[in-house]
Image 1: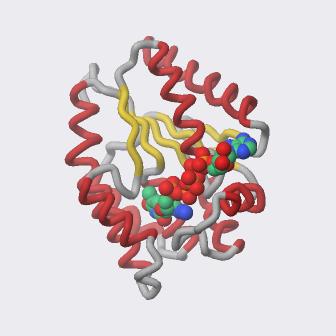
Image 2: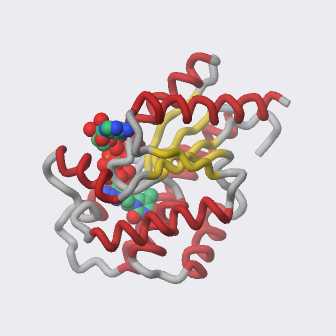
Length: 213
Ligand code: Z5A
C-alpha cells in the first residue's frame, strides 16, 4: 500500500457480541473526522461473495465438509479483496470489514479443528502480508452472545452449532489476540452497549492519532 492508502479495520468476535451494532459507532467516528470509508462484510461483500455466503450459512448443505467450508471462505475473500477491498484502499478509502481472516482461524481452525498451517497457506496465497491495520475483537462469554442471537429467532448453519464449538472459537480468537497484541484490541462486549462504544472510540482515537504521526 502507498502512504496515502486507506486503512483496513476489521471487527471480530463470536455471534451476538455486537459487531454490526458497533460498526455503526466506528463509522460515526470516521465520518466525524471526514474520513471516507466503506463498510463491508465476510463472507460476502460482492455479488459472488454473497452467493457463497448463502451456501455457507444456509441449511441446505448440512454435509458440507470442513475443508469445503474453509475453501469457500477464502473463495469469497479472494473476490472481495480483488473487487472491493484492495481498490478501495488504493483509492484512499478506509475499509471497515465485519469479519476477515481472524474469523477463519477462529471458526475453521478453532471450531472445526483444521490445522493452522492449512489456513496460513491459503492466507498467504489470497492476501499475503496484506493484513488489517486494526482489529476490534469484541469478546463476551458464549452464553451472553448466544442469548442475544437467539432472541432474534431463526438461526443460520453456524449459529446452530454447540456451546463447545463456540467456546473453541472464542479461545482461538483470544489466542490470536495474544499473538498480535498491537493489531488486535480486545473489547469487553459483555458490558452495556454505551460502555462498549466508549472503549471502541478510545481505541480508535489512539489509532487515528498514530496514523497522523
Ligand atoms: N465465518 C466463518 O466461519 N469463517 C470466516 O472466515 C468468516 C465467517 C469470515 C457469518 O458471520 C458466519 O460466518 C459467522 C462465522 C462465519 N457465524 N455465524 N453465525 P456474521 O458476522 O454475519 O454472523 P454473526 O456473527 O452471527 O453476526 P450477528 O449475529 O449479526 O452478530 P453481531 O453482528 O456480532 O451482533 P449484533 O447484530 O450487532 O447484535 C446482536 C444483538 O445483540 C442485537 O439485538 C443488539 O442490539 C444486541 N447487542 C449488541 N451489543 C449489546 C450489548 N453490549 N448489550 C446488550 N445487547 C447488545
